[in-house]
Length: 307
Image 1 (cartoon, rainbow, N blue to C red):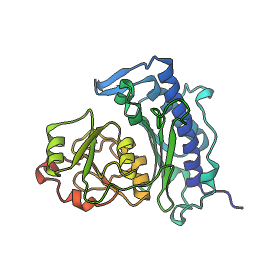
Image 2 (image 1 turned 90 degrees about the horizontal axis):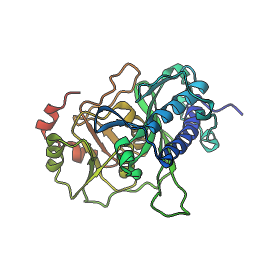
Image 3 (image 1 turned 135 degrees about the horizontal axis):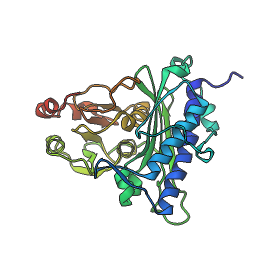
C-alpha cells in the first residue's frame, strides 16, 4: 500500500492539531484568566488562548512538515513552545480517503498554511462561545484547496451530557465532512454579516440586497458555517478588515461543497505566501445563488473598496 499523499497527511494532522487547539481554548476559558491584550483597538483583541493555540498549531505542523510555509495571525516568537503544546496525532479516517489526482504530486515547499488560532476573539471574551472557531487553511498555487474548522464550543448550550466541540474538514475534489449540508429555503434571503465591525458602507450594501433577515455574527469561520448549514444564504462584509487566515479554511470547505467566496467586487482571493494579508475589498460568500447577490451589490460600494 502506497503511503498517503502529502496533502492528505497535512489535512489529517491539521485535524488532530485543531482538536488539540480546542482543548487549549476551553482550558484557558475555564481557568478564568483570558490575558486580554488590545492590538489595534477595543475590537481587535488577543487573548492567552490566541497565543497558546497559535504556538501549538504552528509548532506541531512545522515539526511534521518543516518545508511548508505557515502564516499565523499573531506575531509571536516560535522558539519557546513547550512539549505539552505539541500534537503529533492525525485523523485515520482522512488518511483513508484517496487524494484527488491534481494534488498527488504536491511538495511540502509548495504548500502555504494560513492559521487563525481563535477566530471571533472579541466574542470569546464576551462569552458568545458559539461564534468562536479555530481555522487551518491549506493553499497550493495561490488557491485554498483544503481546510479544517474546529468549533471548540459547538453544542455548549445543550446541557451537561452533550459532546462539546466539533471539527469540520474539506478538500476540493473530495467534499466536506463533519456537519450536515443544508440550504436556506428557496426564495428566502438571509444575510449574515459582521457583529462588531459595522459601518455605513457595510449597512448600505446590506440594505441594497433587501434581505428578509440580517444575522450579525462574529468570526468568518462561523459565518461560513451558517452558509453550509442552511442558516444564511449570503455572507456579506463590505469593508476591509478580514484577513487571509480568516478566509482560507472556510473558502476551501465552502468550495468543496459547491459554494463561492470572493471579495465584494467579485475577485478571487489569492493565498500564495507573498500576498498581502488583508482582504481589503471585503467578502461576499454564498452556498448557492452567488450571482443573485453579486449582481445587486451597488457600484458605489464596489468603488469604495479597493482590492
